[in-house]
Image: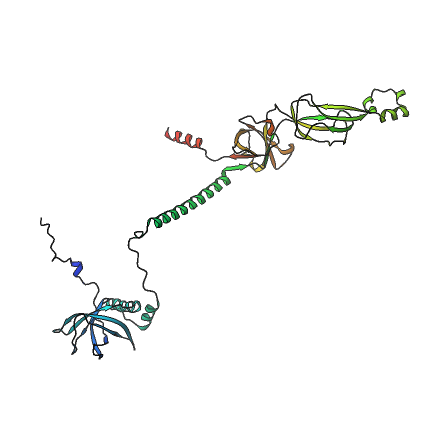
Length: 387
């Protein structure tokens, strides 16, 4: 095979005609080098040039002229101003071929419309030409090799912008997915707190109370927590005979006072003091509520009645204690109506998987029941499908 390049070979695409040539009736008017006005007949025209009949005027290849192509439309003459260059001269045939130079966009659009209508066999009127001249017939040229002219900084900026848009879209998709999941699969308790079985310290006699401990203080079993003051008459009531209940003796006994001490029944934390210091209390009134420090803490929560099916005993839950970052897990062990009667709320008791410190008693808790598919659920379904 001969590998020497043949420079005389020309591909057919380099020699073929680039534009359709049609015979449109029209005239060419232009001025020659001697500034003579010349009016000649058009032979044919295309989007790239035209030819006209050469009469007595001499032409040379390479000459530049400025003129006007004129076409008869109805009763009007359409004139297209343009610059052209002589490309070929055929004296024996009386033909001069020319090429357009710097043809305007409006002129190009009008000329192409005339050629297309002629090839399609359609009639051209003035209204169509005016419409073509008024509209935008050209678009901006495409950039050769998009991104080829970008430097490394431009490419980095483009990639960063695309990544930012992707992350924003991903975040929005995640937020919408989480909201839909929370709406259909997650149930939140209306209110909840950590509770311990409370002990009550009552007033043994009528009298006034004076606390000896601070609110939320810790007391040991048998330690004094308050003193009470009562009259001698109250202390001896039920132990005096009728002969000892004379007015003078009753007045003397009533004026005399005695003091007693209230002690803690366990190692407890003072949950509430129900009777203020110095206030009078009757026999049997609850003075203090104590929380045992060795008691087992549970979580009490309240759910709307419409979530009765979700808040049934045996349902696993997760809860987060106020002030803690990590959630804890537990299980509902009992449920009942609030206050023991007909109510719109359900009261449930939750047993934590891990023992809660007694110091957390009374802390608010956020309780969540998640009914959605978990990772273990997906694994079990995959194993079942494999079997």
